[in-house]
Length: 186
Image (cartoon, rainbow, N blue to C red; front, side):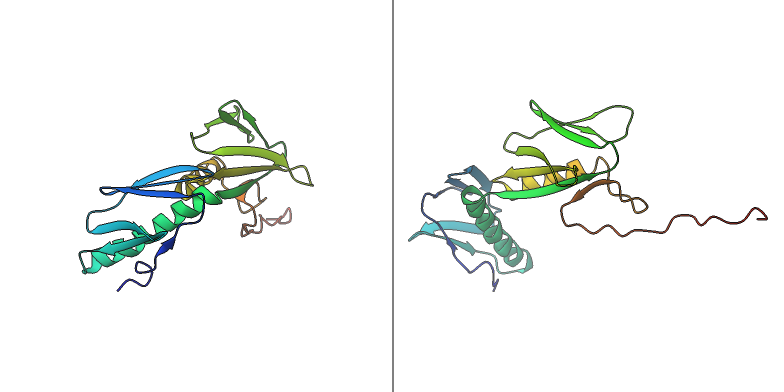
């Protein structure tokens, strides 16, 4: 038995969960999400709880059972509280700004990097106490928030010598020692 799959998902107040066929629709104060459940999984709403069951008790059925329950729980939490990730832009002259539907990043390249903000994502750029840009990615879809943050980070991953780049807030970058200078005799 899946220990995660058999636990019911409690539906908070102000949240509406509907199941139509294999599609689960979740609506709350922060937005609405929908997801199509894989085939051996069945979802039903009973007494303010979402119950997830499986008709297939083999390895794939059990793993999809726990996965489905976890994804539905993430959807319920997302439409109520939302998810956020923060990225710190570190480097001399590195800047970030939201311009219309795009995020403009100045990362030391010969051109500014433009990133189109996805539809259900809210991006804000603030400065930290030491004047480094802090990008906050917010939304109700946990997967989309994480993917958007990862795509922004990919423009300039933190490098190990000077620590320049875009990193998650709180991420520890392993630093390396640079070249050692030798004498003139070689």
